[in-house]
Image (cartoon, one colour):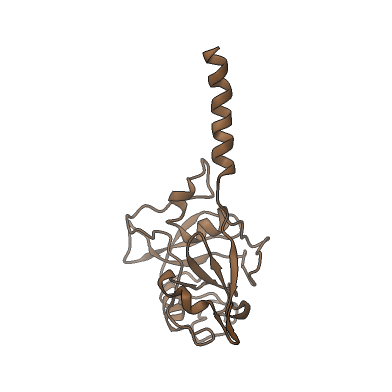
Length: 201
Protein backbone atom coordinates (compact mmCIF):
# COMPACT_ATOMS: atom_id res chain seq x y z
CA UNK A 1 0.00 0.00 0.00
CA UNK A 2 2.83 2.42 0.81
CA UNK A 3 4.28 2.11 -2.70
CA UNK A 4 0.89 2.71 -4.30
CA UNK A 5 0.34 5.79 -2.14
CA UNK A 6 3.76 7.26 -2.95
CA UNK A 7 3.35 6.62 -6.67
CA UNK A 8 0.17 8.69 -6.52
CA UNK A 9 1.58 11.38 -4.25
CA UNK A 10 4.61 12.30 -6.36
CA UNK A 11 2.68 13.10 -9.58
CA UNK A 12 0.12 14.99 -7.48
CA UNK A 13 2.88 17.08 -5.89
CA UNK A 14 4.36 17.87 -9.32
CA UNK A 15 0.94 18.87 -10.63
CA UNK A 16 0.36 21.12 -7.61
CA UNK A 17 3.78 22.77 -8.08
CA UNK A 18 3.15 23.48 -11.75
CA UNK A 19 -0.36 24.79 -11.22
CA UNK A 20 0.79 27.16 -8.45
CA UNK A 21 2.98 29.26 -10.77
CA UNK A 22 1.89 32.88 -10.50
CA UNK A 23 1.61 34.62 -13.85
CA UNK A 24 2.03 38.35 -13.54
CA UNK A 25 -0.88 40.66 -14.16
CA UNK A 26 -0.09 43.75 -16.20
CA UNK A 27 -1.87 46.94 -15.19
CA UNK A 28 -2.08 49.99 -17.44
CA UNK A 29 -0.23 53.08 -16.24
CA UNK A 30 0.19 56.57 -17.71
CA UNK A 31 -2.92 56.12 -19.86
CA UNK A 32 -1.51 53.03 -21.54
CA UNK A 33 2.03 54.32 -22.04
CA UNK A 34 3.33 51.78 -19.49
CA UNK A 35 2.27 48.56 -17.75
CA UNK A 36 2.88 47.61 -14.14
CA UNK A 37 4.05 44.01 -13.52
CA UNK A 38 2.60 42.94 -10.16
CA UNK A 39 5.01 40.00 -9.68
CA UNK A 40 8.30 41.69 -10.55
CA UNK A 41 7.01 44.96 -9.05
CA UNK A 42 8.36 47.00 -11.93
CA UNK A 43 6.70 48.95 -14.72
CA UNK A 44 7.44 48.23 -18.38
CA UNK A 45 7.27 50.87 -21.09
CA UNK A 46 4.37 49.96 -23.39
CA UNK A 47 6.43 50.51 -26.55
CA UNK A 48 9.21 47.92 -26.67
CA UNK A 49 11.00 49.85 -29.41
CA UNK A 50 10.49 53.41 -28.23
CA UNK A 51 14.10 54.37 -28.99
CA UNK A 52 13.57 54.07 -32.74
CA UNK A 53 14.53 57.26 -34.56
CA UNK A 54 16.10 58.89 -31.51
CA UNK A 55 19.66 60.22 -31.34
CA UNK A 56 20.63 56.98 -29.56
CA UNK A 57 19.56 54.80 -32.51
CA UNK A 58 23.06 54.25 -33.94
CA UNK A 59 22.89 50.75 -35.46
CA UNK A 60 23.84 49.68 -38.96
CA UNK A 61 20.32 50.57 -40.17
CA UNK A 62 19.45 53.98 -38.72
CA UNK A 63 15.80 54.23 -37.86
CA UNK A 64 15.27 50.60 -36.77
CA UNK A 65 15.82 51.20 -33.05
CA UNK A 66 18.96 49.10 -32.63
CA UNK A 67 21.92 50.62 -30.82
CA UNK A 68 25.12 49.90 -28.93
CA UNK A 69 24.94 49.01 -25.24
CA UNK A 70 26.27 52.39 -24.00
CA UNK A 71 23.64 54.15 -26.10
CA UNK A 72 20.92 51.88 -24.73
CA UNK A 73 21.97 52.66 -21.16
CA UNK A 74 22.02 56.40 -21.89
CA UNK A 75 18.67 56.30 -23.71
CA UNK A 76 16.89 54.68 -20.79
CA UNK A 77 18.52 57.01 -18.26
CA UNK A 78 17.45 60.08 -20.26
CA UNK A 79 13.92 58.86 -20.96
CA UNK A 80 10.94 60.83 -19.72
CA UNK A 81 7.44 59.46 -20.24
CA UNK A 82 4.51 61.76 -19.48
CA UNK A 83 6.72 63.65 -17.04
CA UNK A 84 8.09 60.51 -15.35
CA UNK A 85 11.87 59.97 -15.42
CA UNK A 86 14.06 57.40 -13.66
CA UNK A 87 13.90 54.60 -16.26
CA UNK A 88 16.53 51.88 -16.81
CA UNK A 89 17.17 48.75 -18.85
CA UNK A 90 15.83 45.47 -17.39
CA UNK A 91 18.25 43.47 -15.27
CA UNK A 92 19.17 39.85 -15.94
CA UNK A 93 21.06 39.56 -12.64
CA UNK A 94 19.02 41.61 -10.23
CA UNK A 95 20.66 40.37 -7.04
CA UNK A 96 24.17 40.89 -8.42
CA UNK A 97 25.36 37.36 -7.59
CA UNK A 98 26.82 36.91 -11.13
CA UNK A 99 24.39 34.03 -11.84
CA UNK A 100 22.20 34.65 -14.91
CA UNK A 101 19.33 32.15 -15.07
CA UNK A 102 18.04 30.77 -18.37
CA UNK A 103 14.39 30.49 -17.40
CA UNK A 104 13.14 29.52 -20.86
CA UNK A 105 15.62 26.66 -21.22
CA UNK A 106 15.34 23.04 -20.14
CA UNK A 107 15.09 22.09 -17.37
CA UNK A 108 13.07 25.16 -16.52
CA UNK A 109 14.27 27.27 -13.62
CA UNK A 110 11.95 27.97 -10.70
CA UNK A 111 9.99 31.19 -10.77
CA UNK A 112 11.84 32.36 -7.66
CA UNK A 113 15.14 32.15 -9.56
CA UNK A 114 13.62 33.67 -12.67
CA UNK A 115 12.54 36.79 -10.82
CA UNK A 116 16.26 37.63 -10.84
CA UNK A 117 16.08 37.84 -14.65
CA UNK A 118 13.41 40.41 -15.50
CA UNK A 119 13.37 39.80 -19.26
CA UNK A 120 13.14 36.02 -18.96
CA UNK A 121 10.42 36.20 -16.31
CA UNK A 122 8.32 38.38 -18.61
CA UNK A 123 8.90 35.89 -21.44
CA UNK A 124 8.59 32.58 -19.61
CA UNK A 125 6.13 33.25 -16.82
CA UNK A 126 4.04 36.13 -18.18
CA UNK A 127 4.07 34.80 -21.73
CA UNK A 128 5.19 37.94 -23.56
CA UNK A 129 6.93 37.07 -26.84
CA UNK A 130 7.50 38.69 -30.22
CA UNK A 131 4.63 36.61 -31.58
CA UNK A 132 2.38 37.13 -28.56
CA UNK A 133 3.14 40.63 -27.24
CA UNK A 134 0.09 41.03 -25.03
CA UNK A 135 -0.61 44.72 -24.36
CA UNK A 136 2.82 45.82 -25.57
CA UNK A 137 3.70 47.31 -28.95
CA UNK A 138 6.75 46.56 -31.09
CA UNK A 139 8.15 43.55 -29.24
CA UNK A 140 10.86 42.78 -31.77
CA UNK A 141 11.80 39.25 -32.78
CA UNK A 142 14.39 39.84 -35.51
CA UNK A 143 17.15 40.69 -33.04
CA UNK A 144 17.86 40.72 -29.30
CA UNK A 145 17.35 43.23 -26.48
CA UNK A 146 20.09 44.75 -24.37
CA UNK A 147 19.81 44.33 -20.63
CA UNK A 148 21.40 46.54 -18.00
CA UNK A 149 23.55 43.61 -16.86
CA UNK A 150 27.15 43.13 -17.87
CA UNK A 151 28.58 39.71 -18.69
CA UNK A 152 30.01 38.41 -15.38
CA UNK A 153 33.07 36.83 -17.01
CA UNK A 154 33.91 39.89 -19.13
CA UNK A 155 32.13 42.98 -17.75
CA UNK A 156 34.52 45.41 -19.41
CA UNK A 157 33.61 44.42 -22.97
CA UNK A 158 30.35 42.45 -22.95
CA UNK A 159 26.76 42.78 -21.75
CA UNK A 160 23.84 40.39 -21.44
CA UNK A 161 21.01 40.32 -23.96
CA UNK A 162 17.69 38.53 -24.44
CA UNK A 163 15.61 37.23 -27.36
CA UNK A 164 11.84 37.57 -27.40
CA UNK A 165 11.70 35.27 -30.44
CA UNK A 166 13.26 32.18 -28.88
CA UNK A 167 14.01 33.11 -25.26
CA UNK A 168 17.29 32.69 -23.46
CA UNK A 169 20.19 34.94 -22.48
CA UNK A 170 23.08 35.89 -24.72
CA UNK A 171 26.32 37.86 -24.58
CA UNK A 172 27.56 40.52 -26.96
CA UNK A 173 30.23 43.19 -27.26
CA UNK A 174 28.95 46.48 -25.86
CA UNK A 175 30.37 48.67 -28.62
CA UNK A 176 30.32 46.48 -31.73
CA UNK A 177 26.86 44.91 -31.55
CA UNK A 178 23.55 46.72 -31.95
CA UNK A 179 20.38 45.50 -30.23
CA UNK A 180 17.00 46.91 -29.24
CA UNK A 181 16.32 48.51 -25.85
CA UNK A 182 13.27 48.34 -23.56
CA UNK A 183 12.84 50.52 -20.51
CA UNK A 184 11.49 49.66 -17.06
CA UNK A 185 10.79 51.71 -13.95
CA UNK A 186 11.87 50.69 -10.48
CA UNK A 187 9.37 49.66 -7.78
CA UNK A 188 10.16 52.29 -5.20
CA UNK A 189 8.77 54.92 -7.53
CA UNK A 190 5.94 52.89 -9.06
CA UNK A 191 3.42 55.01 -7.13
CA UNK A 192 4.26 57.81 -9.58
CA UNK A 193 3.11 55.62 -12.45
CA UNK A 194 -0.34 55.09 -10.95
CA UNK A 195 -1.19 58.68 -11.78
CA UNK A 196 -3.01 59.39 -15.00
CA UNK A 197 -3.46 62.76 -16.63
CA UNK A 198 -6.93 63.03 -15.12
CA UNK A 199 -6.13 61.87 -11.59
CA UNK A 200 -5.40 58.38 -10.25
CA UNK A 201 -6.29 54.96 -11.55
